[in-house]
Image (cartoon, rainbow, N blue to C red; front, side, top):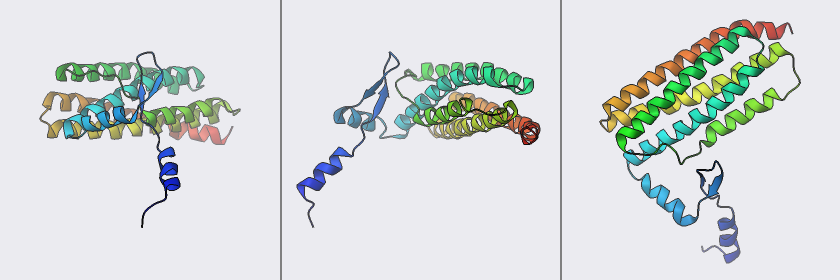
Length: 202
C-alpha cells in the first residue's frame, strides 16, 4: 500500500531538525545535509566516542553555572559547602576532558547536551517555587542527584568506549572523574538523610 502525498508531506513536517551550539552561545538548526554529515561522523565507535565526550563537556559547563546559582539558594551550610567543593572538583573534571580532546586532536565544543539542559530547567523551576527553606534544600538535593546520575551514566559509557578503542590514558582520566561523581552522589545521599527530616518538620 502506498502513502498519499498529503501523508508524506505531514510526515516531513513533523521531522525535528538537529540542533548545534554556536560559538556565540546560540543554537543553530542543522539543515538536512548538515544533519547527515553529523550522522556520518558517528558511523564508527570513535565518532560516537568523540560525540559522547563533547556531550559530557557541555553538560559539565552547564552544571558549573547551575551549581553556582544553587549554592547561593540553599540554607544548609553543609549543603552549600558540599556544592562549593563539588564545583571546584567539576572544574578539574573539565580540565581532564580538555586534556583528552587535546590528546586526540579534537575540539571539545559544538554539541549542546539537551539532557542536562532539561535537568537544570527542572532545578531552576524548583528554585522559583515558594517553599520553606528546608523543603527547598531537600528538593535541590534531589535535583542535583539527578544531574549526578546523568553524569555517572555518561562518564561510564565514555570510559567503556575509551577502553575498547585502546585510549588507555583517557580511560584512566574518565574513570577518575567517574569515581568522583559517585562519591559526590554518596555525599548528597548522606546529607539528604538529615535535610529530608528537617523538611518534614518545616
